[in-house]
Length: 77
Image 1 (spheres, one colour):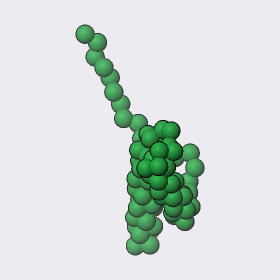
Image 2 (cartoon, rainbow, N blue to C red):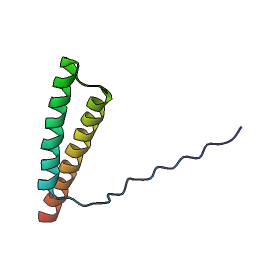
Image 3 (cartoon, rainbow, N blue to C red):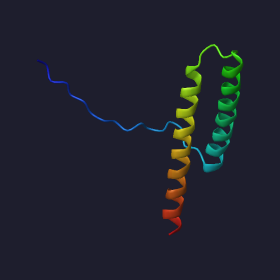
Image 4 (cartoon, one colour):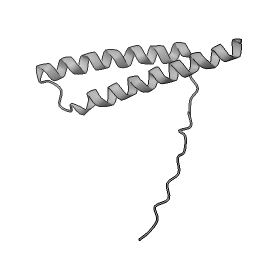
């Protein structure tokens, strides 16, 4: 039996964004989520997986915003 070798590689950010840019992306994603949910209720949404993907995108944006806030707090300290 072959041994499966796994390594965890952290995702490298290809673009560094400021907190304001991340918050703008968050607001846009939140609006998309609301519109997707509305479309799903009305039966207009053809791919309901969009809701899950958008929720995960929002979670990653909130994580990035919080990490940036912590980094700025450490720099000011």
